[in-house]
Length: 128
Length: 97
Image 1 (cartoon, rainbow over the protein chains, first blue to last red):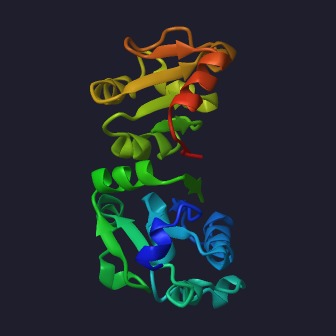
Image 2: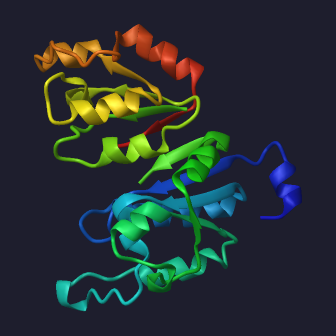
């Protein structure tokens, strides 16, 4: 997303708040799918991973033995879709014994108060 | 920002997570099973009091009544449906579903 686009009043700031682990339900997968679909509309998108949502980003997910198609590799295409604002809540990450080295994609680690401020700046915050 | 919580704090982390992100001019509205967080005399009361020291907390009265939650922790404000609408009009909202 270029600065020119961010200044355009037709461009809305939309934040996807990812709070679910990847395979216990459909939310996390649906959230990622929705972001990829929305990316076609050239809006100012961001994703923030909070709580068990941080587990969705863990690399080395091997789902063969549970008989479902994994989608961790799909996160890699976010960059191609120019979705580059990917944030992780530090406390959620640390509480779960994770570091950014454990994640499949580069992320920006933020404190809760920084994320709260970003949420306030959005036109819409969408829970997944 | 208006943070809406509809899960009991006793079997779901939504309320605790919400509390970490409800800062500044934020307010929290408890609805559905979220209203159990407002019940006085529970193990959650101390945590709620900490939250009340930081932001305003509302509970939707039709939901407290429906669940027999009649002793509400001091400081929690009860609202009816039109109060709910007023809060939504006044703030950007996020639902911790």
